[in-house]
Structure formats: C-alpha cells, structure tokens
Picture (cartoon, rainbow, N blue to C red):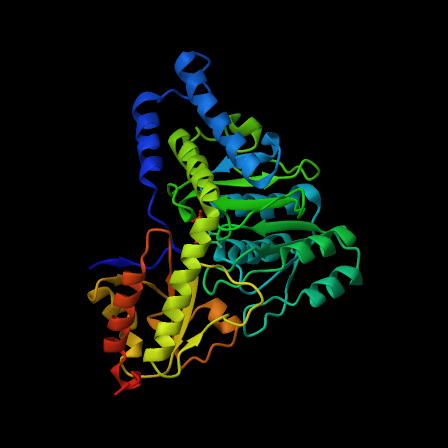
Length: 382
Ligand code: PLP
C-alpha cells in the first residue's frame, strides 16, 4: 500500500480538472493577448475562470489577478504595498509561511520598514489583543499580514477579529488563505480584507498557478513588468490551462465542501484517537486551539532513538508524510512554526495531512506502521 498523507504540501489533482486542462492545452492553445479567434477563445477561458474565483470569495471580477503561485502573489502584495501605498510598518506572526517571512526580511533590510511579529501561544494562536494594542499605539501607515490557517499545525486565525481591528485603526490587511480555500467559505465582503492570496495545488488543482484578490480601494502597481497581461497588473503570457484548472478545482471543492470537511474530520479524529490508544505520550500540536483546519494533524512523538528516523521509516513503509523540521547545515531543527509554539526539541513532530481521497483503512494502516516504527512507546493492551 502507498499512502499519501501530505496534502497540506500539495494535493492530487481532481481527474476531471486534469481532463479539462488537457483539452485546453491541446485545443485552446491560442495566446490570450492575440486578437484572432484562437486568442479570443483563450481569453474567454481566462475570464470565465476569473468569474468563478471572484464568485467563490464574493469579490468582483476586476479584483482577481492570476500569478504563478501564492508565493508570487504574496511577494507582489507585500512589496508593492510598501512602494505604492506608503506602508512603513508590517505586523505579522512568526508562524507565517516563508513566502511572507522572507519577504518581510527583505523589506526590512532594503526598505527600512518596521516589522513586528505578534506573540503566538503554544497552540499557534496569535495574540490579537496585542495586534489591537499595536494598531492603536500609533497612526503609522501599517499593514497586517496573517494567514487564515497554518500549514504546519492547522491552527486557524480569527480572521473576523483581524478584520475588525484593521478597519477600526485604518490598517491594511493581507490574508494568506492558501490552506483554507476550498475547506471553508471565504467572503471578502463579510470579512473585509485588502488582499488575499491563494494557490491552485492546495485544493486539487494544478501546481504553478495562484491568484490574489486586491480590493478596489487599495490599488498597487505591478511587481512583474513586461506585457499588458492581467490588465497591466502582472506581465507574462497567462498559464491558460493552469488558470482554468485552478478555477475548476476550486468550484468542485466548494460544491463538495460540506461532505469533504465531514470526511476530513472523521479521518483526522480517528487518526488522533487511534494513535493515543496505541502509542504512549502522543501530543497533537494545536489540538486545543479554538479552531483548526480539518485536514492537518501535527503529531508530536515522545523522544526515542527511532523517532529521529521516522519520516525515512514511514517512507520505507509506503507512507508519505512531512517532517516538522528544517535542515540547517545538516542538523535537523524544529521548523520555525514548532519553535514559535515552543515545541520541545527532544520530541519529534510529523505532519500528517489528509484529503478527500484518503480513507479510514489508510489511517489504520499508518497507525499500525507507526506502532512498528516507535516500538518502545507502543501501549501493550494485553
Ligand atoms: N502560504 C501557505 C500557507 C502555504 O502552505 C503555501 C504552500 O506551501 C504557500 C503560501 C505558497 O504557495 P505556492 O506553492 O503557490 O507558492
């Protein structure tokens, strides 16, 4: 058996999305900037996709822009908010994705902006009282960049409260919604934000395609320069099949969302309770957070000699999961998210993340394999 439990990293594409893309790649190969029939057909595919994405988050079509990834979308927004909108202070958290954190490092060193990281508790919950305090402390032109759901431990941020604070103090808000899109309903009219970023491959769409939402009241200039694509907002010939595939995948995900979330919760809850029954001293990172993504289970295993090799041994057993560590000069260290939640460094954390394609049988299989991998901690039921 080969089990794929690394869906927070990327998801398998829906077969109907792949089929849709093949048709576009082979039949609708025109350049959307060309004015002839082939070009116009490709253009109409892009605009249909834009409509789907806009509707999915309750934006207007003019507020959605396609990019090569959520990483590019985030780089675009953060850089251009500083240059075009006069942002001199960015408030974020230490548990953001590297596409935010590394961009903030760059902005701090090159543009001399102030970057403030909010405190995070041991469940990965961001201190929003502190956000309010900071926002109220000065009227410096500020932007808050916080993710909707954490990709490593699954903790969800109270986005409605961030919106309320940002509005109250006239602070711009960028939300990295990569892990939440397709698993929760997002309405940018209800929960207002100036910018939102998303990525096709996290909801069973293709890789190498992303988008951003930019509210009509906070217009930035392009980050990538060249042709006039994306209404002059992002140069480069559009990835027509990728754009269409992403929109199709988001539509399918939202249509099936209720059932999917129920299925994911069933898998996750079964996995966590079975592990606790079978292995001593199991901890679930972020388990006590007020809200969690339904598909992420970040498991902290007690120290043992075999725990260190866990990802390797899981892979040998046919299980793909993700290590919660970063490799720095050959030495394994906890990832920045685990460090932020003060995960004890002698324990070993592994992220298991599920999708609609996973089954309870796979969960049971993985629990059995884990018992064999950390035998010293296996609970004897005899
Ligand atoms: N933000 C989060 C929370 C993510 O999990 C990821 C992907 O791992 C990204 C941003 C980057 O997305 P992309 O792969 O489209 O660059």
